[in-house]
Length: 345
Image 1 (cartoon, helix red, strand yellow):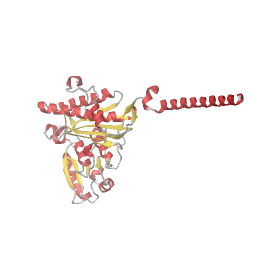
Image 2 (image 1 turned 60 degrees about the vertical axis):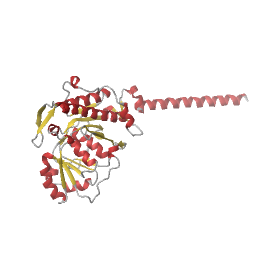
Image 3 (image 1 turned 135 degrees about the horizontal axis):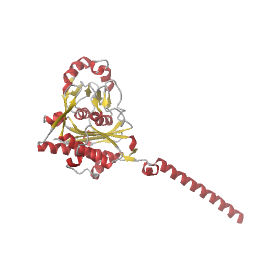
Image 4 (image 1 turned 90 degrees about the vertical axis):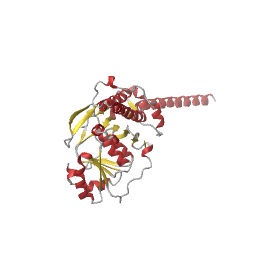
């Protein structure tokens, strides 16, 4: 009897030791793998759901600054250069104020994150009309996404356009004006926010493979036999019109518009079947639209078919080979424009 008890005690001790060793291994593995325990290895992880909410609020704060400048009728315009079409590239006080609000909000809440903006900080502390230091939890509560993802901050690059369609803003063509935020993960646009600050004021957002804003849900995709409707920049509508007739047939319709954000949304909501840009374009212009269109199972590439995968912090800020964005039939458009003067730039 005594021997049996001793044997049982020895077995239980062995089992207990093995169990403790297992727990230690599990704990060490958790420390190594879990982003929420990342302080132990000096890594900084970011909640993408919180970053989405922050991006939405940043875009809206920028929009408030733009509207405030417009209402005060104190729009100071300077020319910072020429576009590829040899058109003046203006910048206004609204651009700078919007940049200050958006950049400050994002960098305050995520100080380790790389944020790339079209504009530069010029006296931001004295320009801000809105509070950029407080995270807006109400937006987080409104995002209908069930689970979160934590990503190493070193893999994140945020691209912001504080005022898209500046020229049109100065001409009171306010329907084209947007503010945009895009989150690229390892160079791929994954979260896009496009905010329209003027009436009808709306914010569109999408997170690839996770969800989209209500105003992007239940949209009908263009059918394969629908006539092509291309949306292009106002500055080169004539060139695209002539080439498109040859490539796509006489049924093609051309819409000329301003602002890459506006044109991307027109494709996203089904008002155009394709957005074509035939010259170089900056990445802050297209990143948010690329994420939104990708979330709707669409495709955005260069006119040569190169995918949007180089939006990292050390990548060039310019897309040199044009742009094609579609919700459906992307290859059909690429094939028909292949070899044309549009695709060749």
